[in-house]
Image (cartoon, rainbow, N blue to C red):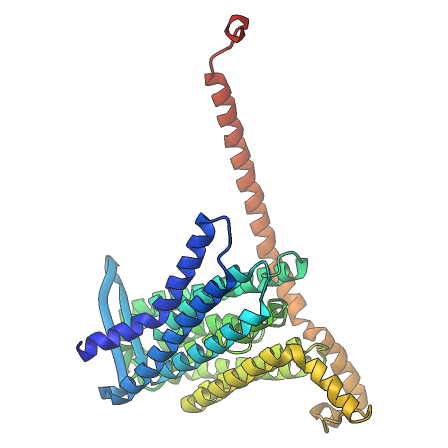
Length: 461
């Protein structure tokens, strides 16, 4: 096997293995009335994830040895419409291979943790099918050599995220949280789709080789004019804000903790939330060409950091505190990218993902351990030291506390002016569709009755 063929096989294996498992579990659920045994489902997902991890480590070695430290597998255009062509191109470079290896490792840990955590839950197979689909989507995001292909994986990640937030669909709160995340994703994904369109328009390509003048992400320089780079960069920033739960659209992130703890750890502790920062790192050369976009990105990062830090201080449950802690670190990563400190952003993101995933997986037993430590110390309170808010005057501190409890009114404003109108519009569209469906069904029923032959008494005799 030639090195090029081997590289292509490894790159294809990482997203394909979990995708095959997802399709197998889904098909088995459709054709069989009985659910697959938990052992079969769990081991299948573990095997696919382990294959992805081995392939990722292998690719890491190959990237170090490759000229330019990048591997590209170009399948050519899948289809073309006029001057536009959708290219199937996979790229693994220094940025993507680091994230790919980390995501595969954490997914393997999370999947193994979930086998015990979700044991005997009625939705066990559904949970692992969604985890497998998430792994396939995230691998596609990380390996995509074009923004078009990245968008496909981006949507798979968002879809599985929504379903796992609403996993406990017997309660109203998870359903509302999942719907809130879905609406936020749909709004912000417009930025990614429009960014791909305008990148095609300005650069006549949506891949790194066509959009950048030189180098691979996160380094390199954009080949766009400053005004074009500003416009496209801000569109990608909108997409990253939604996916990473950044200010001002981060209200869905603490609500997302309604889902199971393992999915919260994988999605909102690190991997899914980090996809927004990864996108910004992938298109960092655009921000390097635009001072305006960099200032706006820095402003979003600082606002996210300050808002999440203050609001996180008044949360009363561990998972919400960790959600805001995740947003805080994401804001800092945004600032590093705005300052063009790209490798610092990668190192920070790597450490943040690892630590936050561990903390969220640890959250269910954290309270128990705190009580045990409290008892071992003879009932004495554990002192955590001075906090930043203690340097604030007492009157201002009380006002700041009230503002933090209301999340500074940002969530209420977003709900009133963005989320609720969209949900109301969707509700009206659903009622209109139902009215049309009922009308045509009634007409069809009357037509079927009229077409039936009339029965007489002698026919019934």
